[in-house]
Image (cartoon, rainbow, N blue to C red; front, side, top):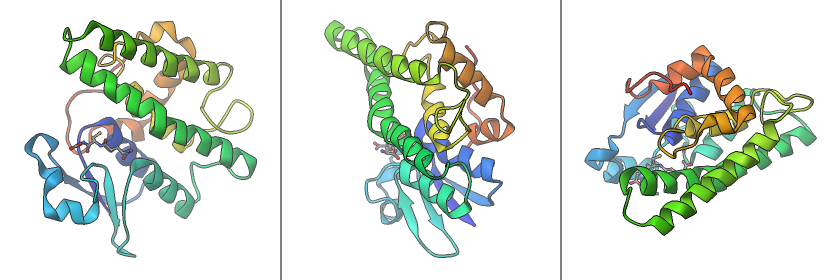
Length: 212
Ligand SMILES: N[C@@H](CCC(=O)N[C@@H](CS)C(=O)NCC(=O)O)C(=O)O
């Protein structure tokens, strides 16, 4: 049994989607970021950075923070959603790209373009350029492929599960998916999965999966 500490954000939904995909039993512990729950001593004992998501594996007692390693650990211990051999490294390459580039750049865009809109034209322009750049990278990768990683046209993996919840906030970072047809097709393909819809609703329902 996995204890999942999470909130209604892209990083949180990565883990609930993965657990749903695995059919893994898990208990959700909401960490209300708007009330500062992430700073409580109880949560900091599990996630020293004070950021969701985090998990605790009841069987081993191990705790993990950071969505990338949580998904990699689940994939490797359950033997699912991570290709083998050389393709494993290519999948991890895209996982690291998500955690190191796509996530932080889109997160910054949410701060500037949604929460502080109209304050600094220069920052807004910079954010739009960064959004366009990560989307162009993803679109180029997905052209002729169904999924981000895997041989041939690809196989559904943790690279998709890490990336998709951020793209689901396309309205927040003002990306028009019509400009990125390969991303749009991939986004809709994954949005159709029952496990993705179930994981998206954790720790509680906010809205249906946004559709372009
Ligand atoms: N690199 C971390 C980022 C985690 C993160 O930024 N979590 C945000 C929500 S999406 C958070 O907990 N923010 C609360 C805070 O910064 O106080 C991961 O991938 O897990």
